[in-house]
Every structure is written in structure tokens, then in C-alpha cells.
Image 1 (cartoon, rainbow over the protein chains, first blue to last red):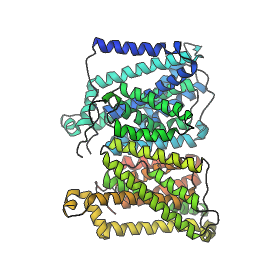
Image 2: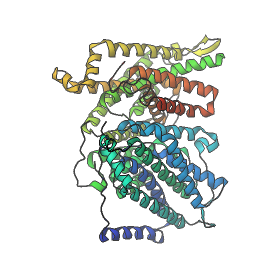
Image 3: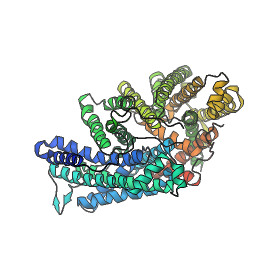
Image 4: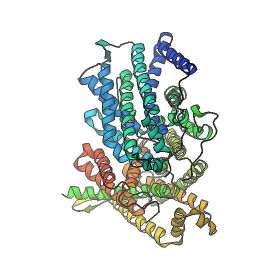
Length: 324
Length: 290
């Protein structure tokens, strides 16, 4: 099966104009809690944590050409790990994020080898099966609260001081999200990132050149698992609660929708997509009598037919299908 | 010991249902290269048709009516999905589209039927129990096992021994050649999609008296069907049968022996099979085989 073609990430030199834009966006994000009330700040914190999950899906789907519906599992593993550490070990936010990242990495390393030997739609199928299996485990395993989830995690702390105000939690989540975003951007621009795009676009040629495609895919799968795990830890830093719903099929599907909506392969587009999707799910849904899934379902179709290249690829014409 | 034999029977009943559901998913995937993520939602449509038509103490007539209506609705949905996915050849788009359809269908069902757990009665003439291995066992489940056997034989005959089956297999192997012979391959493909979806919906009715109907069941069923298809080998009818029997047993024995770990066991079974045989137990190499 041919790898799916996506919008290739533009590897451009940073121009002063671009740098100014990045600084402006960051300034707005940092300043947000000083102008907005507690509720919008809470919403933005959720968006940031979800955007980290979407970033990891984009790393797989957009950069490596591996469409995944199982990434919510590693997000969930990170979230559960962070809550368990918060409940039983320490409220230190850094420890929780590092543990979430490590747990996501280990879970992806343990399950990924089965998935990365497949590509395209079969990969999607396998990740879906892995993701749903992890979801079922979380749902039935009483040691992690079963379907009730785990609640009662104490507020996170930094350097010994608990972060009680929503603005401080937001800044912490923003800081970690920016670091992860920068890390993923570096990987995408590195020689390894070029290897991944090469494997995505022409696996046979890369193999002939001496690369090992399955190994390259395994590497990015583990890396994406780590990013998703850290995202899970950020998700609970604010919610202080985790339930099987946080790692279900719906979350994975919404993450994939965010990537396609934002433009697979571009890093900023999917993050914007994440914000829109979460806004529709959590806020619009409440105002239309809880029928969010209906709107989301229609959104899926609309994205496919109206914006096949996503926000980042707007105006670049329809995506081409390679003959398979 | 007899308790375990009853579990084996339960596993066979579950396996029969899984075979019907996974078969549709596998054929659509094997033939059209489309992963229909709305398959579980089509199953749920069938289950709710049974909720609407099969009252407590209803006779066989109402049940047969529910099966026919579910088959019709399933085929209709399958036709719509075939049209939608053909309009968008990209795999990722197809996955998103079928997901979107699945969300919309599941949401519409919960608007009409609420979020309650519905139980569905077995039709009155077969609602009783018989003594098997010294324990009472529901007649209905034995009939479901029988249905699985009949379906397996029927599909084998259809795919391997009939003209339609050879057209279907040839369409997968070389679409343009079959088209050149004057056969409308587009219609063949839509037909397979409709038949696959109809099987899922009928599975929903037949599973009704065992699994009931409730929101979220679509995801669980889709997952089980996926695992069956992956374990069995894509596009393989025999693989779907083997996978369904295997997963049915793992689930039934796991539930009776290690209830806490039943969901781990299915996952472990899939992982083990894929590590040893990445293409599934009975891989077909892209063809459709009985």
C-alpha cells in the first residue's frame, strides 16, 4: 500500500517576520490569564493539553504518514500515571510530567512494534485496536478506579509551592506545551525528520539507500507516545481527575480530526485545530442541548469535503491521491 | 467442570455473532480497501430495531420482522457509506467520514431511544432453557450457534462455489478485466458494502437477547470485530471464522475464569497472534478467500 500523501511540512529558514509572529502569539498566550476570567483560562488550559496530544498524532500522521486512532491510549497512560503519582507520591508538577512522558514512552515501546510493521489503513486499524484495548483495561481494572476513574488528586506544586490559581496552572501547562512543541519542531527539522518523511513518501527507495523503515517508524512511534504521555500529565494537572473517558475512541478520533482539520504535517495548524475541536465539543455542545456528537459528526464530513488540506493548507488545492 | 463447558458454549454463541459482524467488516476492507468505522454504529441500528419491534413475550414473527427491517436499514446505510467513501479515495478521509457517520448515527439513536440500557427478550417460542452437560442453558443461544454454522457454510458456498462469488473474487483481483467483460464492478462493490453492513445490522438484532442495546455498544462491537479481522487475516472468510471462534472463547472463558482480566486477555491474544504472524492467522495476500 502506498503511504498516504499529506501536506509536506515546510522546512523554511526562520525569517525575522516569522520570529516576530511567534513572539506575538506567545505574548498573547502568556498575557491571556491577566485579562480573561477563570473559566476561559480553564478552557485554554484544556486546549493546550489536548493540543499536545494532537501534536503527537500529527508527528505520526502528518510527518511519518502513519494515521493513528490509538494515540489517546498513551495520553491516558500519562494521565493515569500523573494522577497516581499525585495521589501517592508527590504533588511536584515536574515529577508528574516527566513520569507521564516516561509512561507514554514505555507504553508505546511495549505496544508499538506490533503496529509499526503495518502501514496506511492497516496501521490505523491496529492502533485503533490497541487504543480501545487500553481503554477497556482502564474501564474494567479496579486498581485504577475502573469506570469511575481516579479523583481527589491534590493540586500540583512547583518548587514546593502549590499552584492554586487557575492562571498559574495555565502558565505551567503553557510552558511545558511550548517546550514539547519546540522539541517536536526540532525533530521534524532534524535528519531523522527527513528520514521519516522519506520513509513516508518512498519506502522502497529509503530501504535501498540503507535505511530501516520499520525501525524509523518504531522510533517515531515511541517518541509520539512520550509526547502524548506528557500531554496526559498536563491534562490532569488542571482537571486533577482521570477517567476511562479521557482515553477513549472519541478522544483519539477528535485528535485525528484536529490534525486533518489543521493540516497534517504542519505543526501549528493541528494545534489550532485542537482548539477548535475542543471548543465545539465542550462549549458549543452545552449550548445545543448536549448534541455535540451530532455537530462533530457533521464536522468530520465537512472537513473531508470542504477543507481536505486543512487550515494550514488552505488555498493550496485538493490533496492528490496516489494510485494504490 | 460443567461450568466451563457452559462457558465454551457461551463462547461459541459469541463467536457466531462476532463472525457475522466481522465478516462484513473484513469483506468491505478486503474488497474495497475501506475501513468502515461506522460498522459498529450499523450494528447498533440493528440492536435498536430489535428494541423497537421485539416486545417481551413477542413471537417469532416480530423477531423475523426485526431481522428483515434491520437487514434493509443496514443495506441502505451500507449503500450510503459506499457512495461517500467512493467520492473520497483518500484513506484518511474515508476513516474520518465513516467516523463522522458513526457519531451521527449513534447520536440519533440516543436521541430516539435515550441513554438507558435496553434488554431485549428472546422470541417466546425459544425463550426457554434446556439441560446441557447437566446445566440449564438458554435455547436461544444454541440457535445462535446454529446460525453461525449455517452462515459459515452459506458464505463458503457463495464465495467459493457460486458465479457471484467468482465475480466478487475476480473484481478484487483485477477490476479492469472484470469490467471489460461487461460486468458493472461498481455495482458489485456497492453490493458487497451493502451486504456487509446488512450482516452487521442483523448481528445487532440476533445479539439483542444476549448483549442488549445501549450507547457505547457500537464502539465495543467495532473493537471486537476489528480484533477478529486482524487476528484472522484481512479479507479472509475462514480467518474471520477462526478469529471469531478464538475471541469468543477468550472472552467467555476469560469472563468466567478471570473476570478482572478478561479485557487484558483479548488484547494479549491479539498481540501474540500479530507478533507471531503479522498478517493474521490465515492471510490472503490481498485476495478475498473463503
